[in-house]
Length: 400
Image (tube, rainbow, N blue to C red; front, side, top):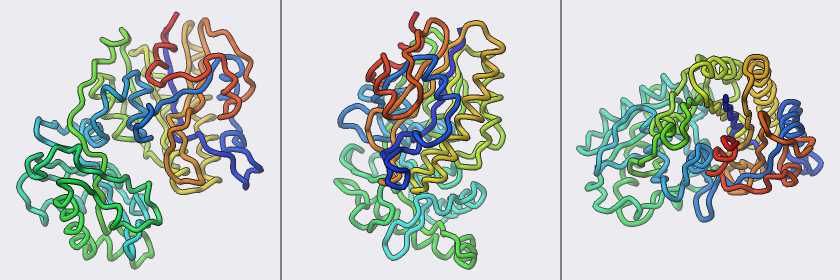
């Protein structure tokens, strides 16, 4: 049996006046997700356990079958794992965004989706200028980077420090949202030093001349220590793989022993190589019985508050990933199951994640249809699987 899971990050939303009271998922043309819902069965999945922050990290752990309440230690350790950064005992990883702050307002959580090459130069510059024993910056992709800190520098356990994700405070004053709690003073001092250093860098002066958002500050959040995940193959008895442009997903995969498959041209943004993800996923199924394909674009549209881009990203996901991959699977393999879902909602009206239950649907071998005609937040409430806890979804997918 071949098992395929396609995740459209942040696809779920709230009804919008501009869409006559419908959600982007209801308005978008989703031929293939609708077919999976109509010919298969589904429901809603609660990927964010009660009381936990509605991050993609928590949701991704759930989707891959790990209960976040037992396995989650923070976002940054997962991204560190993606970069093969070995997080030793006593070391704390922080997610380090390059951001744009103007007049003490968080203007852009991604510094204009800065290029990876420019970002690497700025992170290297920070390492040279902030020469403090016990800390080190590691470059990542675009605006997403890692800072490793010795726990003894903070003089407190990491759970005493509260950090706010930058995409949750767009348009808000930064000072009230700086790291807080015992041990946060050091983190705030690093952030302020970095801002003083970055504002004069040539990359940022050029960006200002071009009227682009400069990477004039860093924002630290998502702190944690290394988690321990039971190997996926040991847990489910299935050899698996994963495709994503996002380090967070790749880090979870590496910690779980899943094969991370690289695809040229995937960006984690609107311009990602959708077709390449589908084609590489199909090829992976000859070596692996499980593949998860993750697409970030709908989530980015939600954060930016763009209805047009969100609908377009959902349609691209449906046609170029779900449809393209489903056709190949149907034509090639005799026994298969195909699940499509979103990890969490990223409502246009809020520009951030929520913990609402979100739709999922499964098509394939021995899945009896429940005759839902469309894949969206409202219709899937009527699915036969009702509302599931996210970490049980794979058990449902793999069940006889």
